[in-house]
Length: 256
Image 1 (cartoon, helix red, strand yellow):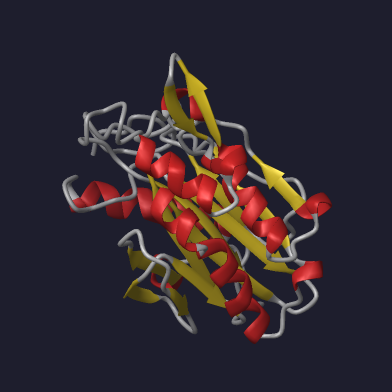
Image 2 (cartoon, rainbow, N blue to C red):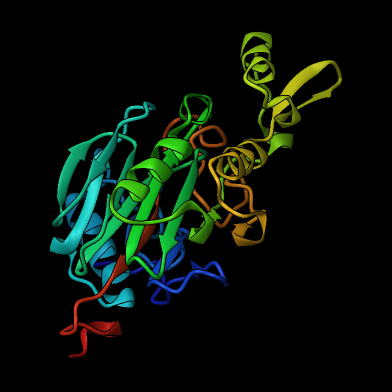
């Protein structure tokens, strides 16, 4: 099997204590146009994607069978994952060790959340529709139902398309302004642009996450390190944002 790179490049939020990562495209075996650590098997060679997923999981001390993932539909459904598996929705929460929550992105924003005291984790997929629909708020509520407390939550907003690269229509801009998220809208040469990182941070703050517990990567998915649906005209791979609590039998690299 052709190996594009041997070394995974994973981004981490400095304040999250649970094993987690925001993947980049470095460290995988997929070939162009998906070259690198593509984690989506809808168009790429499934064998390459399986190897990529195995590498990512092993780096965090998990098996691929422990991954809980979604068919994402740009909605606001939150799934309570008790084991690894595959569901439809746009966010996942769990209070079980041995479950690795995974969100796929290629311009939309991944959100990772934890309440370290309660042992409750969350992960959400936030495009403009999900952001406007309050997917972050719903994820916080679902975590609270499992014993988390908003004031204890730590949240990370991973790489996604930056405002400079994200012009939107007047209708979308008006919808954000009407929802009290007008701070996400800027104008460049008369065209509205949308800052989804800011918008999701604001929604998380409104949901009770302390500003001091919020981290934003500041990276744009149109950079060469990432997959970008918009930059690549729809033919591209996907990154994963993952978070989980290992069981006592697992450690990084698959060691007991």
